[in-house]
Length: 430
Ligand SMILES: C[S@@+](CC[C@H](N)C(=O)[O-])C[C@H]1O[C@@H](n2cnc3c(N)ncnc32)[C@H](O)[C@@H]1O
Image (cartoon, rainbow, N blue to C red; front, side, top):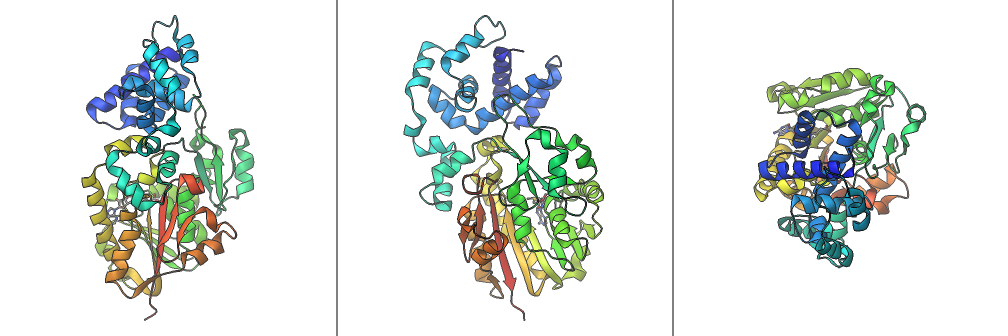
């Protein structure tokens, strides 16, 4: 397929997403099933246009003066692919599968408008109703934070120190352009794709099958490391899900101690069993019924709450979620988070720690939850997050947004990671 056919396909998929309010991944998969002639390169290019258009939906629409799927797809090429209107039109000429080329008005709009002059919410590429959330969560640079959340993400790996080390994995996958991550000690980064490229299928690598690494964003790795799991500890991962953080905690504990991996939704735990086996981890018990935790009350050195959240920190990877999110969903997540913190605290032993993590950047899900919790639970107090971060990453504290008594915020703009929030609370020794 030439660019024109790919563009037409991307417009079709964007129309489907809009009409049926469905996830981008589902719409792309269906398109692939009904167009089996399209090769892997075509699918990757179409997927890139669709995801770029969703990430940059407002700025693409503003640039071309319309929020139609067509404008968004062309806008994605102009904003993310480094194309010019002239180059696109030249490429579409004579391609019978291409959509109509950019009109004179569209070319004029695209060449005369400057994104730097657009209103903040356009530059930030966020829905209007989220603007107050961003303003409350960041200082004057909230639009830059939003803008960074609309970029293409890298592909990050976490090396499993139980079975390998970073140099070894880097040398196994060197043709991918992988580099050590800036902050996470076991992290490897494959940079964001360019144009119509695609990330390598790292899960097909022998090193992956041997358990030498997992796919995990650097921010998630940093949050798990800051939790401070150490050999010999008793740890409860209260929202373990597929086990991304559980495995990172296990590696930090060197297979010495005990991790209880619990999740209230049993199906979410399904992938964890294979992952545990592949990673060579021996000290994890997987539990899905709250009654199974009754013996653990007041016994844990560390309880990790990786809470369900809006996922606003992961909008680079799931840009369609940005436009589907509603105030009602935010309110529901906040209620769950407060409820889970209250339930999880019972397992922390005197002198132990309760760690709260989200992959959201919204203050309402983060610092405000911790403030409310601390108000009602005087036996818990925040650790000094400045000291904690500095000890883990000497001399690098200025990259993260750290509030000594209210936690650490990681963002694409500041730390080059997905957006994450981390807070560690210590229970009084009793
Ligand atoms: C952010 S995800 C966890 C991701 C996982 N820790 C990882 O790193 O791969 C949040 C999890 O919380 C779980 N959850 C939701 N409500 C819960 C509750 N009341 N108690 C425990 N877990 C809950 C969800 O099923 C979901 O798997």
